[in-house]
Image (cartoon, rainbow, N blue to C red; front, side, top):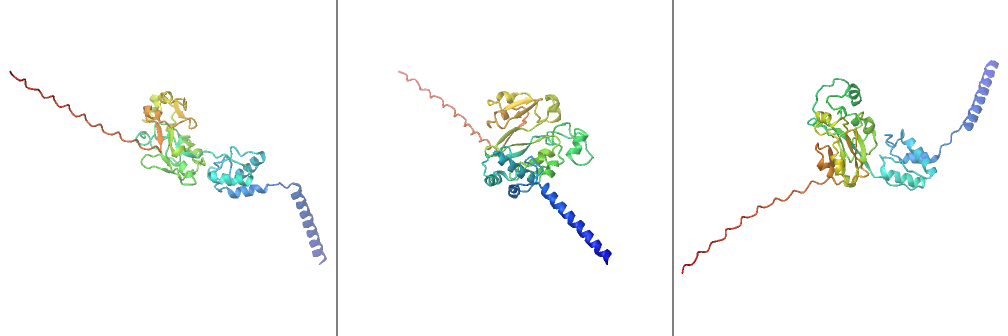
Length: 299
């Protein structure tokens, strides 16, 4: 019995000493966490999509609290929650936040099956990343959409689907949160986040082909050839050409659509504009009736 009692006392003493050491360490090396971080995290949608630029909503909450301590929340935005969530966060932190213009994912490729025929058959893993690593894919264009749907799988909100007729992804503007997951998933960088624009109207170059005009036209009938007609037509200096490819700056574009009309390959796309009014048919001018001849009176 004495040996058992001694063992219990020794083990109890060791446990007590260990508890005291752990308590001292917890106090000595304790990491303070601002309670506002948990409060902000509760306001965020919890999608953990990474569209804000952080690994998850927890990282975003931490950045928001630190930004509030510095006196500014500029550059911090939750694309999923939008202005409503950011407004509640700003109120919680006692900050004012500028409302940024909403954005939407835009697919900058118009090379459908009709315009960009297949010249090869891919038999590997059905993934854009895998197909891209193997080369140009099933068409002659090494820049266009591969159509395997990596962007569809990356989207957590069901905002992207593959059109079976064209083979291209389509974005549902009502579901898109501009989180940027599809942008990161596309190995060819054909998806871009652009401003929705007034009434959802946008004008952009639906091509990312940087080959010279003759080469790009052989691969796709609606590719940008870098001819410069759109840039010359734009009065607002919104269009630039780099590496044989035109780009429309959404910050400068005034949606006049003049560039769309002069593009020889129809590579410039205008979205959500009203259909042009039909030109009234010109009625033919009625023929002028002949002047009746008067008979000369004879004396």
